[in-house]
Length: 192
Image: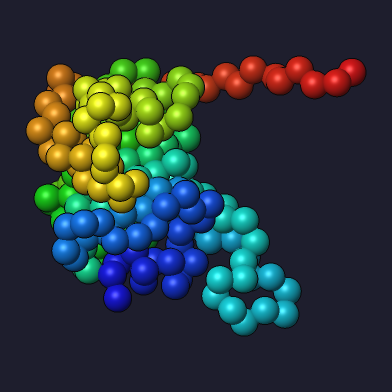
């Protein structure tokens, strides 16, 4: 059983766009929301997958994993403070070699944080689809992905992220948390 199949059986993959094997033996890819804090069990249910909406997720994530470890992960954190929740939840699957590329809504400039022996490459998020924003940030052209399966496109993103050099200086999570910004949501205008 692949690591992603294990996560899926535990109900940790939410709003799944893609989950499957790549053409590289032993590697699987996922796109969707990765659960950080599960929702409560539905009343009367004993099925681990029969839960209410998760309380916290990494939105629009892309994950590449082998049978035991996460090789690459990206997605959106609304708050930098949630980074330790991710590390605690998935620590068994993370290594210093795990490549991360996250967008964070409450930071103002790119950051590189070393936390739990993992380098977290973080970019400020304003709007847009995380997948498209990541392709742009990693200089991946649509033509580079032509002919690849949806799963193998995650490998292409991983390969580009491995060689990406952040210009941000390395700081601690504690220091980064002192630099967060307040996110102002615009009220959406609906029918009156």
